[in-house]
Length: 291
Ligand code: GUN
Figure (spheres, rainbow, N blue to C red):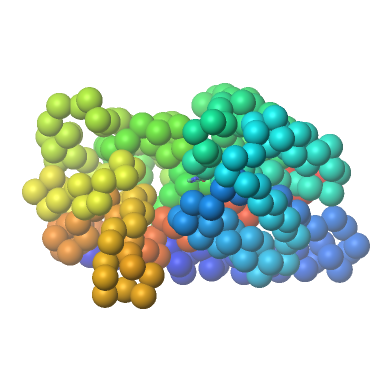
């Protein structure tokens, strides 16, 4: 078993971006600027947004964090997005999900200028991704592809089973893995909550991408010997022995699955850091298109 070390791969990408941004600054060119909006104070969202802003700062990007109260009316959020759409200094706009229930996610995603949609959630960008055109690819599946690329995983002709069909991870993941690219060129099966006997599909998988949000759902009996395991799950599970009161658990039962796998991502330190690296790459790309 070898570790798909996301911390290491992400650091390599971040170091590379830092050098490129320093070069832009030295040439007097525009440097990338990410604007993140956080509505309310969901604990996990706070952590993720703080990590994204910190990564921007470390790479030499500009960042703006806009915090709005949990009861902010939808129209105020849309006004804020419009301001950022019209601000020539801002390259990327990110609205952290999930949003409070009175705000319609679809309206928010559709309001972001597709040319600044570094999360890649806008229907225009999803459409471009499906067609294999240059676009912003959603950060988590983009991060998984970068991780496979970093460790030179040969995916061509492999059977990938994606467990989960969310718009943010499972669906785009299945499209990217089946694309005529490297990594890619997989035969893809998508399993979800209505799939009977998920185990029977997982047992046929050369690659499993677990993105269901159920801690330790994938167990050793569901995994073929030598499979490649990518764990996208990061659920907070209560743990009184931790100072924070919780620990992070993936969708894969790491201890039992790892000995059967050829490659496996840890949680934390696997897909999570890659998501942030991919977001930085998207923001850099948005800026480069302007430069
Ligand atoms: N919530 C969980 N994942 C993401 C993500 O990639 N982007 C945003 N904006 N919110 C999220």
